[in-house]
Every structure is written in structure tokens, then in C-alpha cells.
Amino acid sequence: QVQLVESGGGLVQPGGSLTLSCAVSGSIFSIYSMGWYRQAPGNERELVAHITGNIATRYSDSVKGRFTISRDNAKNSVYLQMNSLKPEDTAVYYCNVHGTYYSGIPFEAWGQGTQVTVSS
Image 1 (cartoon, rainbow, N blue to C red):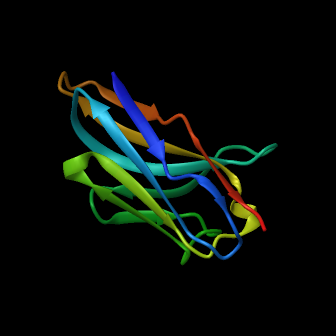
Image 2: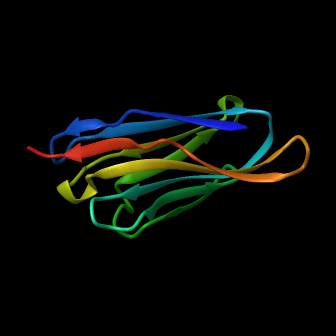
């Protein structure tokens, strides 16, 4: 099994910054891609940022230039640095991972979600 533990959410004022972290554990042979999604009340879950390998990144248009995704392969972790936060960034943020077990079987896993609230 794969476990994802997220941290770093909270309440921040508009214009502020937060960094989300997601640590992955389990009998994992490799992690192919890692990403962050978010879901606001009444909305569908949407992609925020995605990283494949170490440098291939993709961002939603709404966060380009403000958010940065990175990963630490030694720690099986992914991070989301969020700057210049806006009230519309308020949502539950979920970590997502694609990889393979030692058996060769691929997996996809989700974190439990962490709340980010941007409000004055």
C-alpha cells in the first residue's frame, strides 16, 4: 500500500504565501509523476500543478507565475510553494502520485487533503 501525508495548509491573508508538503511512503519501486489538485466547494477537482521526472512541470493558467512545484526524490516528497495567494485559491488541496510497486504493478494514490483558506 501507499500512504500520502500532506501538511502545510492553513489560513493566510491575500498576498501571503504557504508551502504544502506531501510525503509518500510504502513499498514503492518508483514514482513517475506527482501533482497537486484542488477542490473548492461546489466545484470539481482541478489540476493545480504537476511534475514528471524531475523537471517537466505543468501548471494551471490560474496559478502560473505564483505557484512552484518541486520534488525531492530522496524523500519521496513533493512540495507546492504558493505565493501571492488570492481568495480564489481557497480550496482543499490534494496530493496525487503515480508510480509502480516492486511487483511492477502501477498505482495511483491520493492524499487526504489539506485546507487552504485565503482571507483577510
